[in-house]
Image (tube, rainbow, N blue to C red; front, side):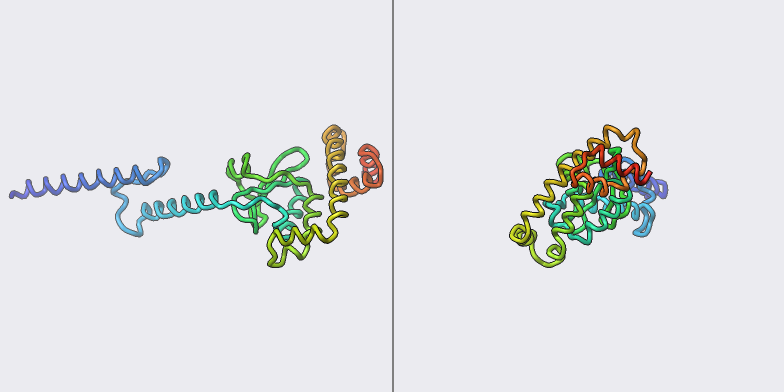
Length: 238
């Protein structure tokens, strides 16, 4: 065999190997990752590291989407809800929770009076949510700040123990359930009337009127209408 023939066969074998690696690359990597087969040289090469991190990211993303919790907010611990109310006090008076993840630290979305939404992760940090995370079927109903505070007050130490949600529920239903339910119904009616008035008149109301939301609610619970309660608070603070 001549030297030219040997070099020719070696070149053909090298080209065949490169074509096979190119084919594997097109199958494994997404379209936005472009790596030449000749770049994949050793275990520590940038190309192999990129492929490794991409695979890990896909696994994490997939597992976070498949893991879901039951959506019963009464099972969320009071300590976590306290952090939620802190963000609500700063950014909006309504909240809803994503069903992706776990009941210990569910991601949530705070909604302000202008219906703008801001998402937070399980550590109460700002979170860039994927579109489906708070999409239809993947989210709880919307709760007001007052409702979350009532959940904290009603749950108290019972949610910080090892009791199951069913046990905690049966305990709350046998101990003082009637006054809590009555207060909840009154508050829900007040919140609805208060928000309807705000929505109809927000163009003429002070920008920081939402800071006095609890005071307005208390006045309405005393029998004042939404118009009277808003007017009294404005006269007092503005």
